[in-house]
Length: 138
Image 1 (cartoon, rainbow, N blue to C red):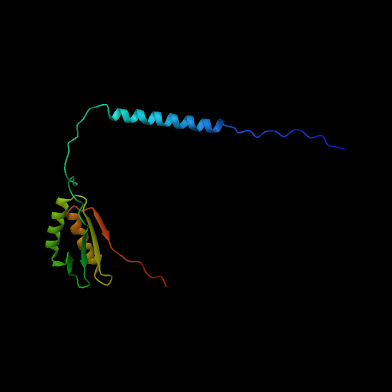
Image 2 (cartoon, rainbow, N blue to C red):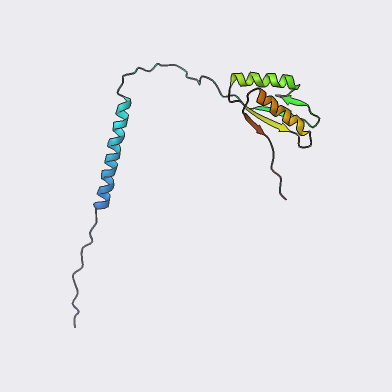
């Protein structure tokens, strides 16, 4: 006895979500082109240059080394506290956000590090870092 079967339904593709996404993309690009037209509202002839360079290059950080015995070294030159303060003032005048890294010997006197920090403060240098290294942990 044959069973009554219903005819197979044809698969249908629902295009509604795809049409929604396409319309959203069209609206997005239309709004985006409106913003770029506002920038072109004024006719401005920009100047031309042959070789454009930045106005000022960012300076390298200043590294101050403080040895165990209290000797202060800046760029390979041993100097006194007064000479260091003058060099820091000069660097701060050239670039207001000058970075100074202080590397003090771990076995040295902490007073020397504090003196260099005070010199940085007197020279109005606010971007100061104290160098350190991580323990091995083993």
